[in-house]
Length: 119
Image (cartoon, rainbow, N blue to C red; front, side):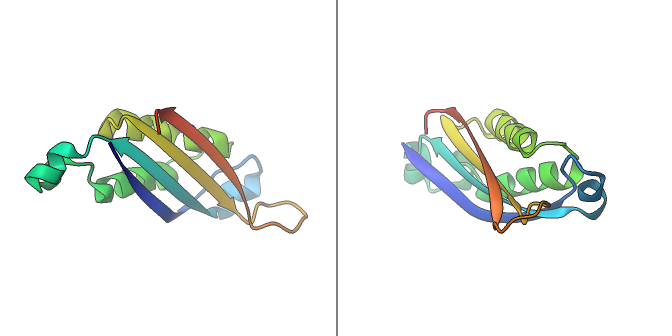
């Protein structure tokens, strides 16, 4: 069993409850971990026998940039669902960070984490 970790994927999206968030948008950062059987790829040395992290990056980017959700939880769940169904890992973990959330206070980001299967 192996794990591919893709960290700090950064995309601009229009998610949030407030109208301003939907109009102005925000930077979102995504981490994803995909657990899968690495044996076939390690023997064949063939990209077709593994999970192509460039394809994962594109799929996540499309979800973040082409959709609008009220909640970061929904965004994280949709990413997990799409990646799990498309790439069929044994398990996955998705973390979505909303950078500089729009309320008074001093914090860098909020983070939502969701998992599927065994990671």
